[in-house]
Amino acid sequence: VQHDGGNAVCFYTPEMAAAATRRMLLTMHLTHAIERNEMHLVYQPIVDKTGRVVSAEALLRWTHHSLGPVSPGEFIPVAEESGLIVPITDWVLSTAIGQMARWEIEDVLPERVFLNISGQQFLRGNLTVRLTELLADCPALRSRLGLEITEQAAVRDLKVAVRTLGELSALGIQTAIDDFGSGYSSLSYVQQLPVAKLKIDRAFVIDVPENPKSNALVRAAVGMAHGLGLTTVAEGVETEEQRDFLISVGCDMMQGYLFGKPMMPDTLADMVRGQRCV
Ligand code: C2E
Ligand code: CA
Ligand code: CA
Ligand code: CA
Image 1: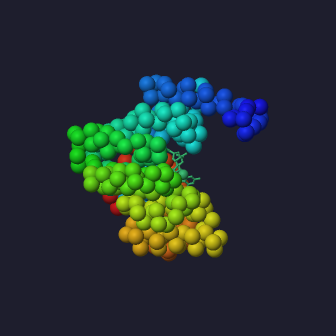
Image 2: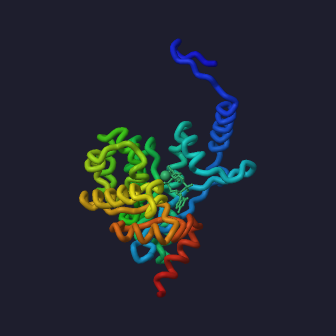
Image 3: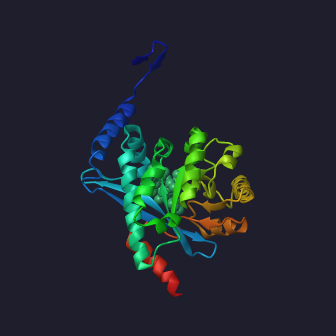
């Protein structure tokens, strides 16, 4: 039992203790993950209505030699809590930009490659400075890069978010609101954010077209996005029924296992190359 400021009392269960131990263990190992070469990026295709790969999302993978693969759903929050998200994001940015430069030479670079930026990193303020540095040798890649931030992050500090999004867009870097619909933010916030894309959360996509409420929500999100001049991407598309519904409500792009799981860079390159020959 822990007394906190004399008025709140917290009870720790064995599960909570185990979770805390796991977090400590992960933090410790995460500190060395980059220098030990345990991280890599996989890329998931994003397709248009015709099924053509137009962009890709880079997703981080961590495989520890004894713990095995740890999912980003588990280690990203740990990285954020410990501040390790800063060097990790830096590694993601430079690795993805390096990959994009190689794809460009091989002529298999998708129109855009999107990277995930955690809220903490996004609101820190020096993101544009770092990106300008990393892109100094390959300025042409700016217009091929995209960043995804969650709506919660943007809404947490609207002033900083609006400024940073404006700076990124001035550089030619496109921005997308990730997990749209999963937070509590109001539409008036989204209206104030200078972003180009809205990614509709998988939680809504999963229930279409069977659930009329999800259908209404997805239709409304697409309509609102278009009204604001944004394009839409639906996440987690797994079935043809979902795809057909999304196309019928005018969703611009789709991402999900139906089109391809997150894959190694060479596999994505093969996919891009393959669709060019047909
Ligand atoms: P997210 O940005 O919403 O990424 C989409 C997640 O949905 C990915 O999980 C992806 O593998 C999964 N997914 C895609 N299509 C389908 C589908 O059809 N069905 C199902 N069931 N899942 C699908 P993943 O790779 O485990 O990543 C989880 C989360 O971790 C991401 O959610 C993102 O928030 C975070 N993350 C991943 N990589 C990075 C990174 O480099 N930086 C930061 N800050 N966060 C990252
Ligand atoms: Ca994302
Ligand atoms: Ca998402
Ligand atoms: Ca998500």
